[in-house]
Amino acid sequence: MLKLSKLTDYAVVALVRLGQKEGVTTSPVLSRSTGIPEPTVAKVLKILATQGVVISQRGARGGYRLAAPLEEISIATVIQAIDGPISLTTCVDGGDCDARSTCGLGEQWDVVNSAIRNALSTITLADMKNHTVTDRLETMSAPSMFIPREATA
Image 1 (cartoon, rainbow, N blue to C red):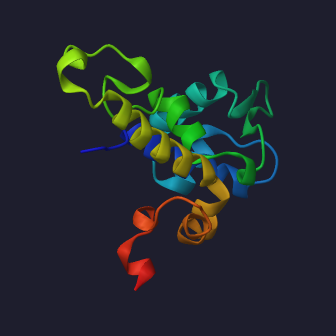
Image 2 (cartoon, rainbow, N blue to C red; image 1 turned 30 degrees about the vertical axis):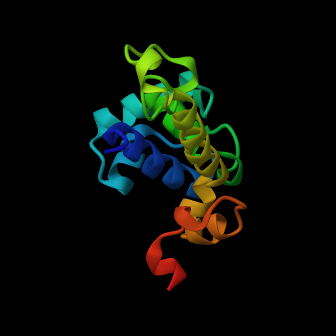
């Protein structure tokens, strides 16, 4: 099963909320408005700051702000900032695999992984905020398997 970490989920929630606020916001304020424990918000924001997704400001009026508008930050960017490269299997993108010589499916997984990475790259935090993920996926030229069944009925 492909599953994102809780930190990535929290990062998306925190970033969307941060994008709704003007100026600089502190981790305790984000914690109160999201319901995510403050130490977790602080940890997520620190990681996102090192990856350039948010900008930290020190001092009495310090806190965090987005490095770019919600429309310019993709879900893929957030996943990669928190969890690292998007890889469905160990053999994706030339990764180390013990069964590469006998399996023969490595290149096929590259195609699948690329499709998922591309789909995640087209969905932005603004789509998450505005509940337009389905709309975004419907405009993709990728196969309709990326559109939830209830959206096609």
